[in-house]
Image (cartoon, rainbow, N blue to C red; front, side, top):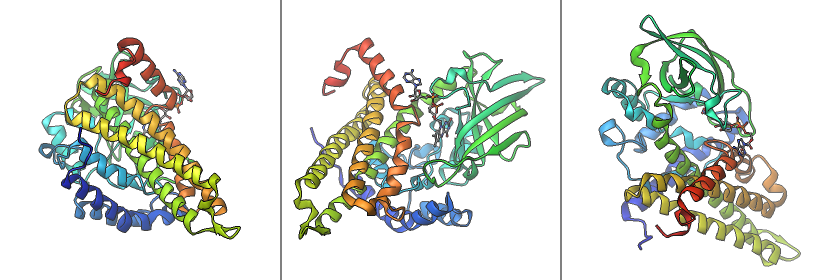
Length: 389
Ligand SMILES: Cc1cc2nc3c(=O)[nH]c(=O)nc-3n(C[C@H](O)[C@H](O)[C@H](O)COP(=O)(O)OP(=O)(O)OC[C@H]3O[C@@H](n4cnc5c(N)ncnc54)[C@H](O)[C@@H]3O)c2cc1C
């Protein structure tokens, strides 16, 4: 077993770290105070992503991406996770489902999206459909050679940074026909209802949209009728790995800041790290990161090694659950070590504390991951998780 990152993986990780420090970290406070990344900063960041060579990190070269392995992507994503306010999302990751499009769709959407000239948001969730997407009420009916889309979507992340939306709808109002559609912006009958505020101040918005009999050409369907979930399966694995990577990056930054503070802060005539109450918190943080990070790179390696998809799916759920919960605990302890300073918005740990909470909710809540893991154990035995591989 070799756990050493290759020279190239180390180089990508170091470059991502430098990109964060030079380009994204200086935007943290302004994004937090403004509620999102100000519009007049967005083009320069986009150009920086291209200049630093991070355009299309999650797609093949054939589709205009960088053709990175999953371990390479993880090395980059982990560093991006260090930044606050969801600024990691300035590095675009076009939805995986686009790779299943027709050649014309790949040319029109995926390739320019990989270069950052287009961007897509993904709309599945609705008021009545969260953990259970079969409750989706958005419908698609084919009439007179046009698709007619009706319904409402919630939580559409990065809508105001996107120029198209991938909409998950039920053809003929049939939950057995979940299907994806490409909707270009602006579309008169795709109405932006509002972009509510959230606990975090994210780089881009999370919008609510209404489709009032929006008409689409037939070639705006992505994949086949009923393939809505099939096309997003790979996305779930990738998104869960990204969340796990970001969680480890965030937890590591918080732990580093706490460790520095504990060394330099003196109370009662000694550094506070000399108090066992503080040292034990630092020890627990380090151990939690150590274990979770080992699992993260193991699952990334499994994907690159062509391990069975079902096993990877099972492991990605466990990883997302564990890393997001570890990050919550580590950042909470880091804030405690920092005392009052950790509670100040100008301190990255305070912002990480707010940012990290959503990682236990989106892309499948912690409870839904446990449902998946429990189901895997029932179906295939505990060894899915307890064997080395
Ligand atoms: C900031 C943010 C951004 C988002 N971005 C997007 C996006 O871009 N596109 C998109 O489509 N969606 C997005 N979402 C939606 C997200 O995927 C959902 O919030 C998530 O799937 C949970 O759904 P829900 O909020 O409706 O909660 P609910 O499904 O109502 O769940 C409420 C509670 O019940 C629990 N629960 C539900 N079912 C079970 C069960 N079977 N067993 C045990 N417990 C259960 C949940 O775990 C949770 O604790 C985003 C959400 C947020 C907060």
